[in-house]
Length: 189
Image 1 (cartoon, rainbow, N blue to C red):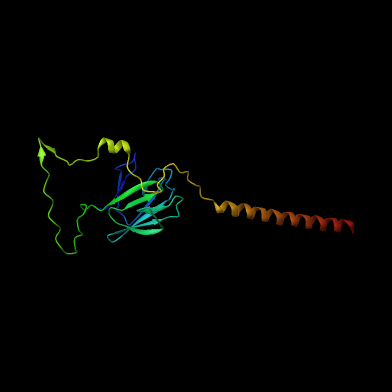
Image 2 (cartoon, rainbow, N blue to C red; image 1 turned 60 degrees about the horizontal axis):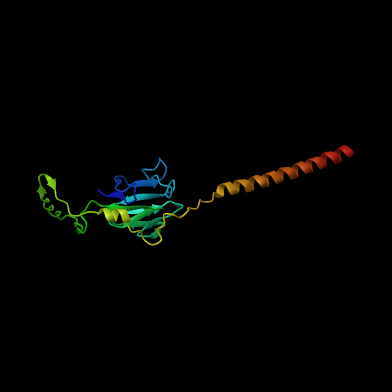
């Protein structure tokens, strides 16, 4: 089963299984996959499962949706590619071992890899991340600045509402002036 794995510090390793056809992603609680980060819009994007393909669609987010640092409005996401919502980086894990070729339809899956040797009941793991690597932090792609100030979207509805209110007020004022003139001219006769 495909899943998303967050790579950002503080959320590193947090995963989300892609089980349904349409998953909404955003900062607020009514999303299927909530990411509580200021750079993520309240309703940022949606993830669509189309057969074995995973498609990402941006929902006109403020800070954009990127696949491998290219801004997208809608694009397929492949295993190993980096997906970014605002400043939150995510990888797609399709559940297949890295570098394994896809199994053709109808073909038997490859045999499981042999188990790793153990020492005293403890599994021997190859070297992972060193403490110095963690202290230096990961390398960020060019243009990935966590110190940027995010711009707020302009709310056009409020602007239109104010303009409409001003127009209605002017029309009412003109009608009042006309009514007063008609009343004054009727009183003079």
